Length: 148
Image 1 (spheres, rainbow, N blue to C red):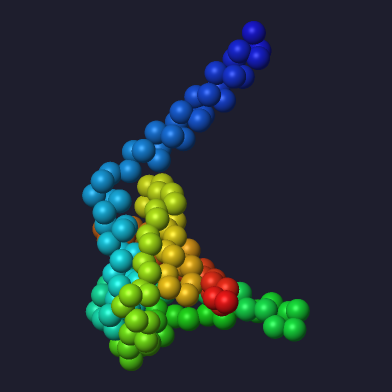
Image 2 (image 1 turned 90 degrees about the vertical axis):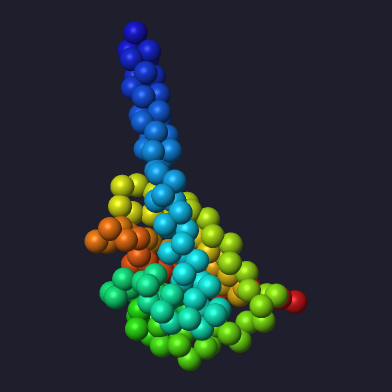
């Protein structure tokens, strides 16, 4: 009897978890995707307005860099990203190589995790609903290995 009760509780937990994820509205999914596209397409286009629209002003974009066996965090701010976009650094990637695959990994209430596979790197975004808009608050990224 205890096994049946425990099994029912565990099963209920998984059903509730599945419902929580499928309970995300199509409008929220579209808005989260659009935020990610404003970020990556804005970068490639050199469109600072699109980039700025996608970011929370306190955003931190970080990468772990390892040299001589020691790791360190390098960080970029929202302002740094917007300025780099305005300078057209993303335009250096030829259009035919501008990869921008967006995948929503998870959404719960006002928080979402999104993966972007770009031309030379992968971004993991933390996106939050802030004053009614979905904006990127954190980015952890990693460079792809050089092509041989």
